[in-house]
Image (cartoon, rainbow, N blue to C red):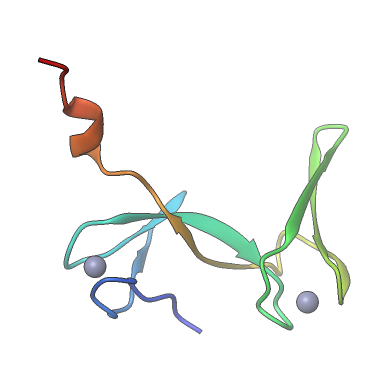
Length: 84
Ligand SMILES: [Zn+2]
Ligand SMILES: [Zn+2]
């Protein structure tokens, strides 16, 4: 169940907080997913603790959630553009 780049269709490399495509260097958000159905989990934050919830399989412990690539992060070049 490896996540692949939407543009290159090759497996992404997993970093601590994100996924990066080794070919085009695009960054993808890390999305916690259910280990059973691989759906994106709802993140519940309460009292400093974080829980993950699957509508079909209930609460998931953060040790068993499967990280998959979510939305593509905006590239650096858009931030560096100046209005001139
Ligand atoms: Zn790519
Ligand atoms: Zn599930």
